[in-house]
Length: 482
Image 1: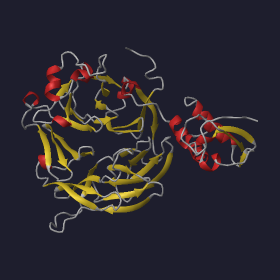
Image 2: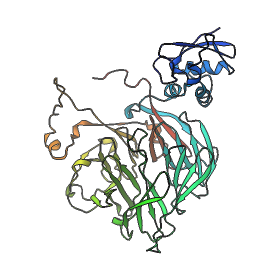
Image 3: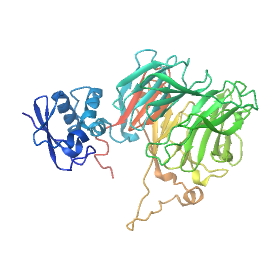
Image 4: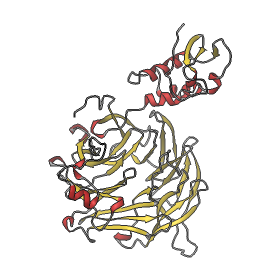
């Protein structure tokens, strides 16, 4: 007879904390804390062990994985997670199997994902729980669980899916640069749920609009879970707009930023970020050619549909010190309300406070000799208050250090940064950079896409049929360098 106990204070059923409950699982006895069990098991009034006709080896594997997360599990993560649902231990097991908090300076390649057929990725979307939806090949979607087990793979009606975002209840919105409409799919059942089209009865040219970009959904703990789906639509004659779509009815509710598309400054945004706290949507468009990069960034007020701030590069006002060094990519740290860009020629990182935008809001930071190759082809992604930047010679991460505090717990000013801090609200000395990957990692090719989900960073590279999964080591932060 073997007895086992689950950890105290974990979410579970309705039993009292500290009260042990005995289970007879397939002839083997287990003693678990009642508060950690599912409601049906924890409230059983019988004084004798509750008989459960299930495999005791699976419960032993669940408890072992919860107690010793670093040890290899006896069964696959998917099998254990499915079994843990019965006992009410799913949340505990998922937390144990999940990687530690993502710290860019200590991240390394943990595993790779490759679909069984047509593996070359075309788009990816990660969820806050660490799960991933991958578009690949000729319109196929593969859904991975938080434990990165492949759950489903199915073919959509799209020839090539180029943008994808996850919705609640295992739904995904998918767009294609070669097929019209925004499409909703059930990832578990593998079927098409609905389609959304951009139409205008007063303008017959608005027809067969394709989706260029979709804004990421707010995190699960956001106050407004019914925030609209935001997507960029573009007609064959280049007219475009940002369409706000009701996530419940899947009907368009508002048209934002309609543009002719006849010039670079009115081309379709290829990146959208919903700034829910400010009631704004950030949009950027970048194009490159024989004469280098050009593009714009804009902030639209979702309620009025008006532009509240914009800048374009090259050209425009307030950028005399950086003229001729336009950005190659940009993203927003939604939590810190900071806007970041990578300069195409110098490779420098520009940062601006969204609450202090003006004609020249940028503070620039240089990577040093290793990042001197410039920012041509760089991809920039903000996640968990960190900025990941792909370069020809590797993957760089910028982290913002915590402000120093004096003995009275007030913020203390860092020397040498008063002028910059007063003028733009940014202390450039509080940023530090490091390279995440090794020389061998960078030889696998230039990074094409990056997406953060849970405590993982998912990375794809040009002409490579796998998705790299980057995680921090469980030993990260164990030794203080102060």
